[in-house]
Image 1 (tube, one colour):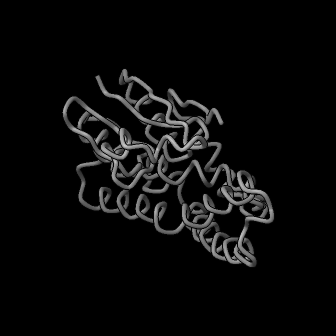
Image 2 (image 1 turned 120 degrees about the vertical axis):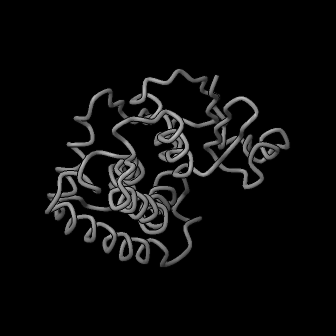
Length: 201
C-alpha cells in the first residue's frame, strides 16, 4: 500500500492527499510532527535526506518533493483527467506546476510560515514586505491568466492541485485576495471538482 508521510498543517502534503483522494487511491497516512522535530530524526532523514514532508513510499519505491509526487501518482494511475498525453497540454501542466514551486510557494507559503508559526520577534526585518511584494506579483500573474481560462492548463489538472493550497491559504500570510477576482473564482472552481477534500489545517 502507498504510505504518505505528512502533517495536517502542510499545504505541500495536502497536494498529495488531494490527488490521492481524487484518484480514489487507498493509502496510509503517517503524521510526522514537524513541530517536535521528527522530520530531522534519523528514521525520517533515511527516507528524505532533505528532511521535509511529504514523502511517499510505494512498496520499495520512495520519493519526495510534493510536485514530483503529483506527477508520479498521475502517471502511475493513468489514465485519469489530471495529466495529459498531449504534448502541449502536458507542457502547460508542467509549466504551471513548476510556477507553483518556484514562484507561489517561496513567497506565499513562506509568508504564511512567518506570520502563522513564528513569533514576530523571530521574523527577519523587512522579509514580510519583500515576500508580499513578490507574492503579489505571483498573484497578478495568476489573475491575468485565470481571467481567460477556468483552470491553469485548460482543464483541471495536477497544475491546479500544485498551485491551489498556498494560494488559498495566502491570507494567513497577510495577503489580500480581494483584488484578484479570477484567482478567487478559480479557488472556488478547484473546490467544486469531483471528490474534492478541504484542507484540514
